Length: 354
Ligand code: NAD
Ligand code: TYD
Image: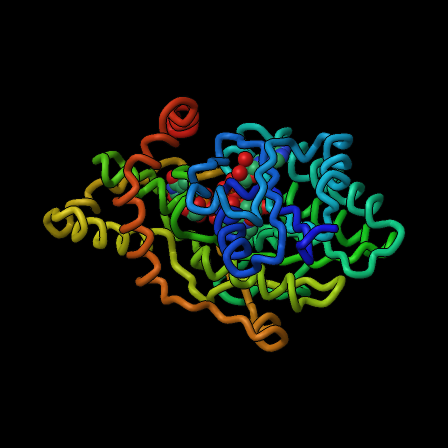
């Protein structure tokens, strides 16, 4: 008989958001066994979890969510009671270069996990939960005004958002068809420590540090709603424990920034931190060819999450951005490790023709 009250399979736990979710769960719930399943793609990094790797309630398993037999065996081996599913290919630009990988991991991988959960829990679904972590990008693009709510129709434009939308539909279909207990959350853009430097904020911190051009897509007037990653992890904790079966929750910080305004604030913070003269980093801004199918604006209405489950973001953006910059500057070795090898080849392909 196990001493743990739950055995939670967290997929993609070595990635950016997953590592924050795992750290929170391992510390906060010593009576839960947290099993981190990760393929360790370019985006997965066990260094992200060095501080908790020896915790008695934590187990790492290297593996691929698309491998059905292996996944079912994993459910059996660890007597999985719940799933928090984060594993995904997550970068829009990479999805434009190679959509098939996104279909395999994000769509097929999700269905493989759903099948395993359905089969392993089939005697009684009660007390189990399949939590699917998704994105606001499934809703498509907003004009100058308005917000995405849980009722907004799906309208994805990139191969990434199309694959996430598809996976969301499968999760709902397994709930409606087979009665599998599920929740879905759709979150806005995250920022914080341990994010791979292909996404806007860590990429630009890395480039500013190294005096490299800052490639701003199009006119830089695209708008994103930024949330501190630790607040996303807190929201996942709240939804996992108190969310209603079959429901969707939008997660966002009511914190919209046009890219160019955010980049200018980041340049200022970096100038101060690096003891550079004011205006130095802004000179690195370079407008480049736009991303195809670029969504103009994302903005999340997270009223439901606040009113029904009591979650609110804990941190103001400027404070979170400064904390993030401090982390990257203090963890140069982490950045150097993840930007060696394949990163260089990706960077050259992605930015060569822009
Ligand atoms: P990430 O790219 O940093 O991490 C993804 C993790 O999944 C990596 O550790 C990778 O090794 C693992 N992985 C990839 N393919 C796998 C496979 N086939 N089998 C097992 N593991 C695999 O991504 P992230 O930014 O941490 O995003 C996590 C989740 O949150 C994703 O589902 C993403 O769609 C969603 N999300 C991200 C954001 C954001 O701003 N980053 C916002 C909203 C939602
Ligand atoms: P990104 O971090 O890739 O997140 P997402 O596409 O999922 O929102 O990009 C955030 C915004 O920054 C988006 O509008 C694209 C833009 N961007 C650039 O202008 N230059 C870049 O080099 C990158 C990576 C993104």
